[in-house]
Image (cartoon, rainbow, N blue to C red; front, side):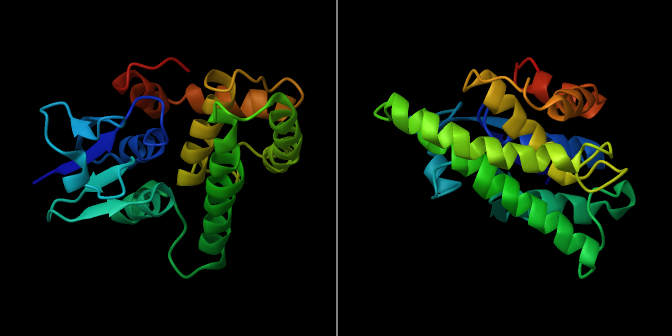
Amino acid sequence: MTYTLYYAPGTCSLSPSIAMREAGIAFDLVRVDLRAKKLANGDDYLAVNPKGYVPALRLPDGQILTEGAVMVQYIADQKPEAKLAPPAGTMARYRLMEWLNFIATELHKGASPLYNPIANDDFKKSLKDRLALRWSVLAAAVRAQPFVTGEHFTVADGYACYVLRSWQRALKEDLARWPELVDYYARLVARPTVAAALAGEGLEP
């Protein structure tokens, strides 16, 4: 068996899609209708992932792995020579995990209420102001180095690419107040693996 990544266009499944390409791991993409919880062939997606959301990764032995921040570390560990994550147990690995958790909770899920149609303008403005402080943390990290943990692209950068794209595309916000993030995002989407992941989902940068 091969790897199978269950995805929905424009969602955080973009992150493991980038990681798989960076690692040079062959995989199949299976699109999920998140509203209907169905696969393209009509199968019940809940039978694959009872949580009902993406991403989910079917491993060659048939196991299903979920939760993107964990999934990308698993991918990195399959191809350590790609240097997508420092070795497990090192302080550098914990720093990477720190970034993945920050991106997952503060930037990714932290923005989720903005998608709620019943959220009023005052609430959205307050939340965007709070999120601006979080974006400033990411901006500071890439002010003097090309990627969040230093000179090398890691799975944290692939996840950051997703949240940066969502901020601009889905939430219709710009990055003008953080020039570092404008440059950082440009570096990310210029990578062939990122371009391929976007194209695989029919997306533009």
